[in-house]
Length: 105
Image (cartoon, rainbow, N blue to C red; front, side, top):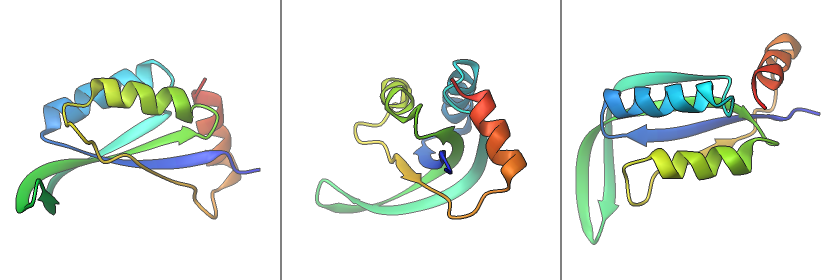
């Protein structure tokens, strides 16, 4: 069974994204995180349309680690309502899935 999750999360800046990503990898709640700077987000917040420069973090974790991963990410995240979206990939190479599973507690 494919236990892998891809989690998308935006951050206000590269420093906070790097700090949070490093913490989650060190805690073995994520196998890795890719940081994609220079993302422009357009969203509705408190009745107004806002635009912000953000950093997109793409975490690789497992469904088994999800409850602890999500709780810790919420604790570390500076936003009142952080974007935390977990996706289960339909196809994953067996070797990569094994590596993620072995890297996460």
